[in-house]
Length: 313
Image (tube, rainbow, N blue to C red; front, top):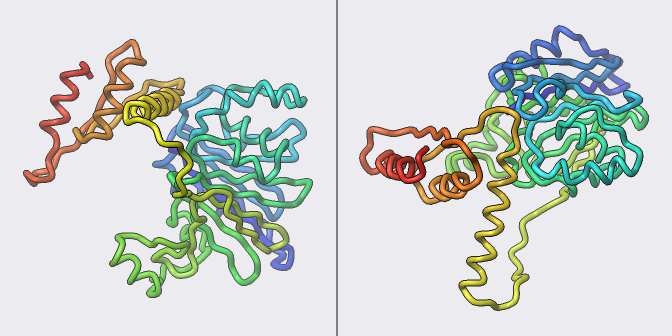
C-alpha cells in the first residue's frame, strides 16, 4: 500500500502549486507509505507520493521519471506481470534504471499511451504527467482494488488522492455531506457510482482512465466484466483442472516481493485455499495473521487454527 496525490491548476486559474500544500496533502497519507516520500512540482502541476517499499526497495523511489524527464509517475499498487514486458520494451529502445514495476508502467505509457492499462495485470492507481503533451493521465485497476478520489472544480483545477482526507487537507473542498448519495450508502453500504458521501468529491470508477488537459477532463472505460458464455461444454474435471491452474498462477504472481510476505487467514474457504496453494511455493513457513470476534457466529478463528496447523504456518 502506498499513497499518491496531486494538483493540476488550469491555465485560466493562473495558480502555481504551493509545495507546502502539496507536502501537507501527501503527508496526511503517511500511514499508507511510511518508508519514503517525494514530490514533483512543475509550475501548475504537482505530484506527491508516500511509499511502502515492496519491490526494488533501494531504487524504486517516486515520483519516478523517464529518460528525458518528460514524463513523471506516482503509483500505488502492484503489477504482477511487469517483468513480462521488459524484453519487449528494451527492444523498443527503452532503458531501465531499476527493477521496479513502476518504471515498466512508465515505459508502457510511452510506448502505448492511454492503452498502456491493457497490458497491466494487477492492482493499481497511478498518475503520469506528460510534459510534452501537457496532459495528466490517471488510471485505476479493473476491479478498483486501489482507491482514487478527485475534485474537479469550476475553474478546471484537478485535485486527486488515494484518500479523501488529502483532498480536504489541500482545501480542494469543504467537508460537507452529499445527501444525494445517502440512499445508495444506506442500501448498499457504500456508493455504487462515482459519487461519494462528500459533496463535490468523486472517485474514478474501476476500469477507467482519466486525462486532464487545459482544465478539462476526459474519462473513459477500458474494461468491464462480461457475462457472456465463452467456453465450450466440458467435463467437471476439465473445468476443475483449468481453475486450479489459473488459481496457482494467480497465487504465484502475488509472491513477487523483495521483503518478507505474509497473508491474512480468516479460516474461510478463500484464505484457506490461498494458504494451501502458497505453502507449496515457499521454502519457509508462511506468516499468517488472523482476527477473531467475540460473536460466536462470526468467529472463524477455530478454522483458521486448523488451517495454520495443517500447513505449518
